[in-house]
Amino acid sequence: MPVDEFRARVDRLVDQVKSSEVVSGVEEVLIAGEPKARRAAERRRNGIPLSAVVRDELPGLARELGVAGELG
Image (cartoon, rainbow, N blue to C red; front, side, top):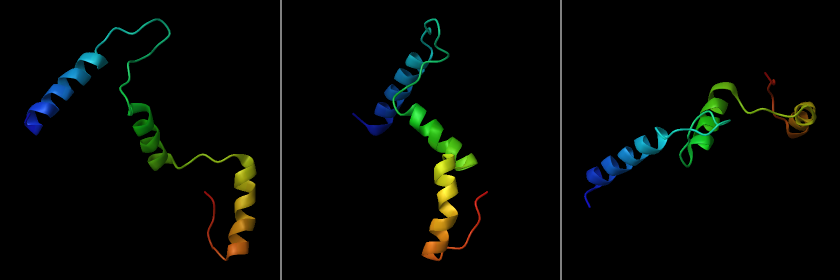
């Protein structure tokens, strides 16, 4: 099958799945990979969340390794 036809079929399938009725307690139908892609985009925008323990350890590790910088 030509690539363009395959892509068109996949696009139609995704549209069909995304337009499915959601069950009670579910906000939206997601396709495979969508949650991970959203999380990656959010982290590119806002950074990677760190626990307080990790955040507290980073300045000491940076000094030990001779890495300059500031956590923001």
